Figure 1: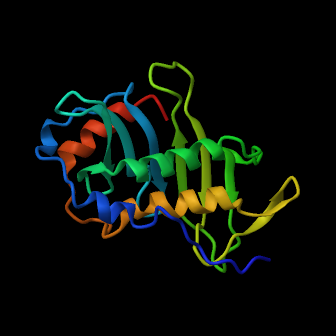
Figure 2: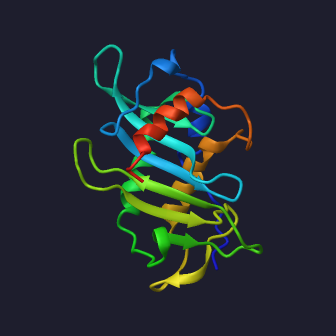
Length: 198
């Protein structure tokens, strides 16, 4: 099995985004049409918890668009364009992976303990499309190992594109502790967008 270390040119994107918080997070209005990517956590302590949602929106000056992230604590952040392109580019590559045949299209990492959390990644079609989101899940994600419990076709390790993508988007949970105070006004708006979609 591979001993490759996890890395990405887009690592620490969340720390960069924290430098540009939305000036008025409670005025941010997420919509289904602007949702680009979502990450939900399914774990014993938290069922269907929001880890990350990426939305596109017009810039305040009306010149082009930008990507806004809502992280696990409900912080509303403007994501640098290069990081957005990297994350969404990896998500599009992940669409080409084979289906696992497992519930929720889950890739299961071999870990020493059972009941590992499942991270559910939803990749949204282009804005305005009525196509359903594409789901791919990773159970027991680790930056130390990619070995799968069961091969998918002849694939015995989590594909590198999915390994990199999962490692990146999970940065949105950095600093989040279960039970910690979160911005429930913002997270409530995001849940409304997710309702009936996932």
